[in-house]
Image (cartoon, rainbow, N blue to C red; front, side):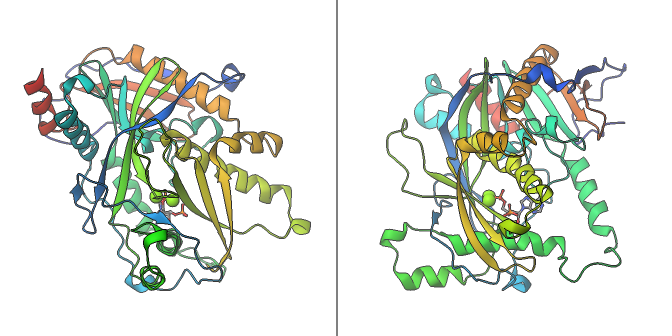
Length: 401
Ligand code: A3P
Ligand code: MG
Ligand code: MG
């Protein structure tokens, strides 16, 4: 494994650096009561507009409305405006929003964390790789990240070049032979997720939106360019984190009091389960495995509700179910027990503590979990902070020191 430097800057370290290892197994050491978690509180936010350009505001916030059951989510697939990062986004928008908050509120109120990263580094939905929180229950877990220590905070970003290479390899793979007629292309499955959002989200509160406006919006071209991102402060045991991630929409207008939880909602689609009398243990297990990712994703940003749109194999929206995020681990414990939320939290807490002990000097470190190895390896690959921290952010911090 030879990490590729992603940008110009200081040369790679000349002498081979020490490799530090953290083993995921045995999991038993993470069982029992979970480390204390601080309820996530929003510290900053930003939006991407319809061209995926950064906006320092709430323009990307959407509101939930119940989508029409029976809708065919294949509709409009040919005009899908699918945004995918072509260039490495690093942590740029997240850092920009943090710097802008400091500008507005003053440096004394700076949001501080032992770690700053995208929520996606802690957990990711629907990639081959599951990330830090979900790794204990995924034998195929793999990830690759870069981390750097700056001013007492560890910043972690995704190893974008390696993910882009995986994606390119995947899309160049020929379609499977003997494909079942019900089997849909990956792009179509991705489309359903966003079509479901378009049917369930409008840009203004439903109470003040005329019905024709709602209907017009539900028929509009499906695009994932616009987004709203919430940045929260939270903690796992003694380790504080600042996490940024996309939030789908609101169930009620945002409260003005920062102590009141925000009624965000996460939308998900999933294939409908067979009717109860035909359900097999493996159907339930498959769905409960999915719930691990749904739970971790929402729990990290303090999203209290998840609405799942169940669809037929060919993409007809059949039914809706609302889950309370905090009830999901208990449901699964009483159900198939395929995963344990306490183990995820305790594993993440221990792992973050170990990272703090390991990344004590400046430099860029690679943090890699190779598939099926069960061991996370950390080593220094470069001096400086690489491109993890934007120049703009470093200048801002220098000015205010
Ligand atoms: P579903 O989760 O309903 O499949 P999110 O749920 O995180 O808000 O993401 C919205 C949609 O983006 C997903 O809807 C899915 O369609 C698509 N999506 C997200 N991550 C993806 C990935 N890694 N690969 C393919 N599609 C993805
Ligand atoms: Mg989303
Ligand atoms: Mg969603």
